[in-house]
Length: 117
Image 1 (cartoon, rainbow, N blue to C red):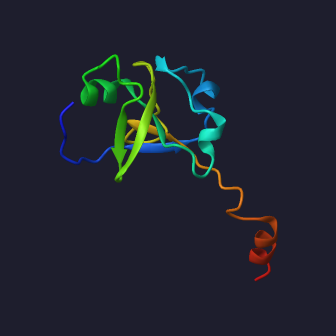
Image 2 (tube, rainbow, N blue to C red):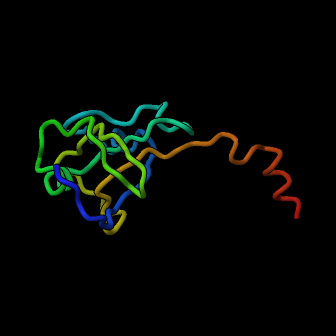
């Protein structure tokens, strides 16, 4: 694939089990792993079938390649089936990333202090 000009790409972060909850399995590759939701985990992405066709020419070897978002590379680990649509967000995301859970973001003692005002 040749270098592309920067463009706006619709992306979303989600919990690792969103697709399985919706009854969707990647057409190729895999879902997110639990450890990929941790702070400092490797950056991974699941792409839509349309994005796979438009940006990678439906290359059967796309898994393991990277997509760059906001200057950060994410390794493609899955491709959603062509039938998948997510009407709850418009425009629909082309690239899905795992939601990063930071257990130290708001510790219980911080929540108590925040409520004391």
